[in-house]
Amino acid sequence: MFKINQFISSINQYGVLKNNRYIVEFGLPEYLKSYEATVLNNTMADGINSLNLISLRCEAAQIPGMSFATVDGPPRIGYGPIESVPYGVTFDDLSLTFILDAHSKIHRMFYDWTNSIVNYHSKGQSQLKEAKGPVRGMSTFEVGYKDKYCTDLNITVYDTDDKPVMKATAYRAFPKLLPSTDLSWNNNDELIKVTVPFSYTDFEIEYYRSTQAFPAQQPPKQ
Image (tube, rainbow, N blue to C red):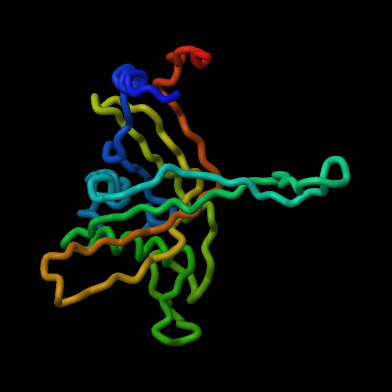
């Protein structure tokens, strides 16, 4: 039976995690590290976190998740319910929402990043002799090398004492798209935000404070 006193005691003893205490960090992929344009105040070669612009403007984030890829197998004894059998895993896209800065540095960073994945600068033509883009010598609609456009992405969650509780690392992550952005004269004070889904190879979570054992559960009284 549920008892409110036990619930309150559990909250007091182990606390809760709040969804607004986190920080997102990732470095520039190799393509953008060598990009000559200086987007973030001449510090692009030092990584986008040199000014904490990305971390400070990440309004919403997600802890990576997974699901099993399954196939329906035959009943174990020839009849009865059909059971699902896992044979692999799939990883959910990781969505990050950013509040754009007044100089469009964040938006340009993602614009250049996506163009380093597939150079979609074409000006309405199938081919350009000198295609514009962050990667020198990359032809129109040429696909880049994944090792050079992906990066590891870290999301660290903190408790109310600002101590790290867990850190999720999405390996070999890259933005899947640059979403369209709505504009309107009806909302004069509306902030412009962009939500970018990231694909990644796999993820790992490191837990910093999970060594304390939970109290043994007492069987319910008859």
